[in-house]
Amino acid sequence: MVGFLSLEWLLRMHSKRLNYGSNRVFDFLVMWILPIGLLLLLSALFFVSNRNVLHRIVYLLFTVPTLFMLFQRPREFRELLREPLAIAFLVFAAWALTSLLWSPEPSIDTDLFKRPLNTFMLFGGCGLLLHYRNDLFKPVFFAAAVIALVMCVFNLVPFVKGFQPGMRMIGGRGALDNPLLSSHIFGFFCVYWLYVCMTTRRLHVLWFSVPGLAVMTAAVLATGSRTPLVAMTLAILWMSFVSRNRRSAVLIAALVVSAAGLLLVYPELITQRGSSFRFELWSMSLERIAAHPWIGHSYDSELYLTLADGYVLREPHSFALGVLYYVGIIGFIPWIFMLGWGLYKSCKERAQPLFILASSLLAYGIGAGLTEGGGILSRPKEHWFLLWIPLALIAGLSIAQRRHSLLRLPVHSLKPVAFEQLCSDAQVIEADGLGPKVLRLVDGRFLKVFRARRWYTSGSFNPYSERFASNAEQLRSLGIPAPKIRAIYALTDGGSAVTYSPLPGLTLRQAMQSLDSSLRESLIERFGQFMAQLHERGVYFRSLHLGNVLLMDDGEFGLIDIADLRIFPSPLRNALRQRNLRHMQRYPQDRNWLFDTHFEQLTKGYATVASTGATAKIRAHVLAAPSA
Image (cartoon, one colour):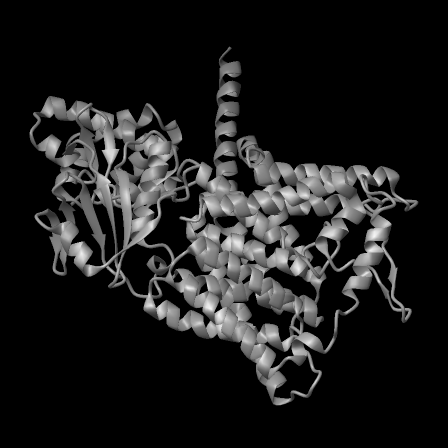
């Protein structure tokens, strides 16, 4: 009997270790590997030797990790299946694979099955990344755009120096070997810099993004391709429509002036190659589509279009015609639904600027697809930048928003006069040498002000007011009381602010000062339980101390001052739990109550929620720490 109990105990301990290790692997993949994979997906074509290298990078750093995480946590897969774009893609891919049943080819290439899986993992990976690590999305995209900008400068300089009529710039040192395909990626990042110009509220960012936009536009023009010009026009019109600010009018005016200038200065770019056989190609493609309009010719069928001069092309130079040819009208329905839903969802959620970026990239891809492309599913390459990457970003943003990790509230600009009016007759709750930091407004709301940080800090990408609001939403979705956000503001001096309804109650430090020893013991035991709940739910609150925990009127605990809080995908690892305790030990009064006088009550409450191992770790850490 004793041996059986010992074996059961060993199995239980082994299972806990496996679970702990599994959580650490999941966290590492979603927190670090997926961001690196996305960065390389967006930028690798500029410096890798060929596309096969990009394929391996995406497989190893995005597809395989995402597949592993979805299998590891089925609930993540269920969240993915709640997204209409993901469902539409599965229907589209399933029909494409079904069409192999009437394939004209004698044998089926197994790579045809990997392509839709690879693309679907792009949707899943973006959903995981934007939910668990959306704070890294903007820096990753910015880094990729800077890489593209630098590489384009290096390519433009020799191109301009040696320019002769008829020359067309190619990507240069990387895997980009075709001017038209290069123009897809140049235009993709051109849309990004245009988005930054349209949405940034920081003057120094605008001064950097305008030259970036100019360089990428020059790179697009240097390719001599007209397809990205059509696509950029559509992206500009869409961005102006969803942004609807003063810059939109300037953008439309700039588009008209640029078009007029291009026609006056360099009309050959538009007229010198005529229609490039587009009308002939489309006519021949429609004739072949008419042979099997509903079910298509099969996902792996070959398309050969012979021009009058005997030149053979294998694409209809239109994404829509390609879909109709390979999978027919039945396959076209989910494909066109993805495009329509992506634009509709983004327009509906345009208060979140990232939706403006993703949908503008999609509009660019739709514009490019009017006269280019034809394959319906491919391995990672230039065509991914036109449709699959923008659609995956929209799907990821939608998933993150549904899971309360992405803000729904718009950010309002607040001029100095309006700010002074808002703060009039307010009570200053907290201040520093620069002025008030927290104020109680006359209507009972609190106003928290975040000072402008240096331009190279993370606050430039993710303002602290938005972090505060996002953290509050996520905590409330986890059942942890947090302030209810009312509005978010961007200030003209580069700072930001947020108004919120305060939680009713006293800070835990204030509450303990008024209690005797026995009541304090009970409260500390409950606090230990609450702290364990935070840790088990993955909440890492760097500033956790008794002044930032509220004892509310209903007896529950809540959190305040939560701008530097992060929510991990898994229960916190032991090192972060110990770091939380070290922070609380810095406050003499907190240390005396929690670690010197009532430490047994704290660990007793902690052990009711956390595992025995985690409790033992923090106990050993505190007992080993030198006394103050």
